[in-house]
Image 1 (cartoon, rainbow, N blue to C red):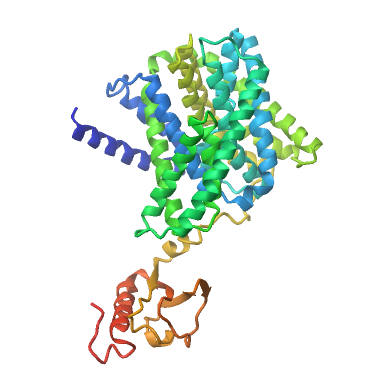
Image 2: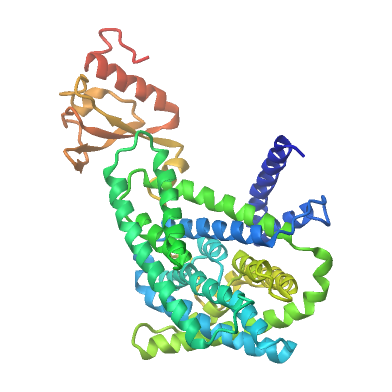
Length: 500
């Protein structure tokens, strides 16, 4: 197939995946399962596209996860998660360690795995999936503290699990000691946090000071900065995931030009990354090899959701309570235990030992695939019901609203930004003399770096910036009127100036 054929196929896949989001939203079925099914349909058992390059899948998967984490950081409201960061950090570090050990003990006992493979499976499954958690939080009304804990934990816990999986996948090296793992993890997390906390503020400052000629360049710049944070940390042998999440968290909560456009671009990029990632992982799996992993997968999955995750949550909650950091109620602990959703992250992590040539890694990958599919299908749709049973579903809680764009779209309105150049005859015109249509208004004036809401008698000046809200139907009329006054002044109509 030539490049045009692949381009056509890729476009059809993306459109099918976009449509499946609507289906998933209506049915409550997690969209990642539909993406995986689409990938399986394209693979060797469907259309016959053969893809079994674990190394390439690993590299693409890590890049896609970096994009997803960047979107998570950009769209996370710091005020919502600020108070939950200590608890989320304990869950993402101490909780991850507990989960790895408990699950390793369980699968070693129940399935007879050797200790290294059992630890590797525990590390692969220890991380909650940021994309899955963010998707749930967008449609499930939870108390802000609980939602913030889940959100921050899913952003933080990818980093330590990647570190452990990489160390355990080094087949040429002996089994790393606990102190070796701890020391490496502390260095990589500390260095990754330092890189992210350096790149974030510097980038935010630069983006505020650099006047780019087009608004579309700002989202591209932010995406480039995200990869600088990720790749820069990786080159320093630090955690790229923690770096990119912290950097974008700082950038996303700074006052940036065209912030709404940047967040919209990041959300679209994250959706595209998810679609490509899940479809690729679906193509990577061999359906004929899955039946033999169903029983081991169910055993390991049950041990994960009924033992490892609950024990890690309970002990982490006890730790933060003893340290007087926070207090997590038993109802919140139950929900946190069940809401530890697994998605693309464990499947991507399972490609690391496969690409490294670890014995039995392909069977481990298939087992993880079974666990993710089965337990995502069970856990995801049941979370709203569990939240209601535990009386944690707060239907009256105000949800996040993108005040920069969402209301205007709902009202079929447009927000216009107008700059008054030095030679414009808008200088000296009072707002009421603009004679805009009744369904349009000048809502704000920015003058000498200060903004204020004008009234009808406010006199406009050179270099003012105006924010004008208008219905979509009247946008062209408003633009023509403003151009006319700019050219001929408030009596533009007498001179026959129409603004065309």
